[in-house]
Image: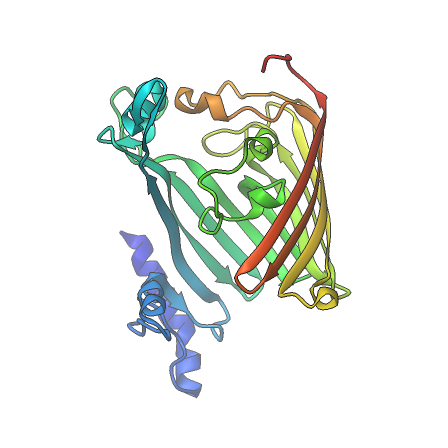
Length: 319
């Protein structure tokens, strides 16, 4: 019960100088100055901003974030009728409501900005059926399946962002596009085959170098677990270099990029992985992966191209 009071005290004490010098600038649900925006949607979304004031030297923003995506399928094939109920019976009942609706994604978390240059954000993968017990607690309850991401970033400029924590590693351009924006129902099996998942590590990235160049470098433990890495497996190294040629092409956005990923222990799976999710927590079965991407956007039209190659395959021909 003390944490909300402490947060309110922090907001009040740090906002006083700004209020004393000029008209109130702070917005957000905790300040009472909310429901802001040009459209109804903007005003509704503003309710999730608890506090925002760029003039506050300590806390500039604290906002709730998340998503809920549900889906349903019904069809007929040579084997007869099928729907989500059949999907549930195949061992996927964990994410199915009432045998009819799949909760494809359910995330909840926050993002915040501190001391002008520091960012802290994270989300949990919400346990939508509420039936997953912590390890060793029969019949217990936990509100989340896993920590989806949680990290801290030092961002003094667009050209330098250094982070540590847990996040989803997005190797290809297709993986980089958020599930809130991707146009297909699911991502392709090819990009999923080279997707290492949500891992713990350190990374640095930036853009706008000499106006056009962007980059990213990262080192991660390759054990995909419920919370943070135990570092009991191998190591994944990632690198990316890109060039933004939008001004040359006279398009809204034109970015070409090359990515590289090396895994010291392909196919590794931690012994601490929850049995409900063991089928999706193996590291990719390749020692090395390369992705060449080009992304074009003009108005409402776009073209994304990914060329991926994995080599040093570690496994069997029938996998």
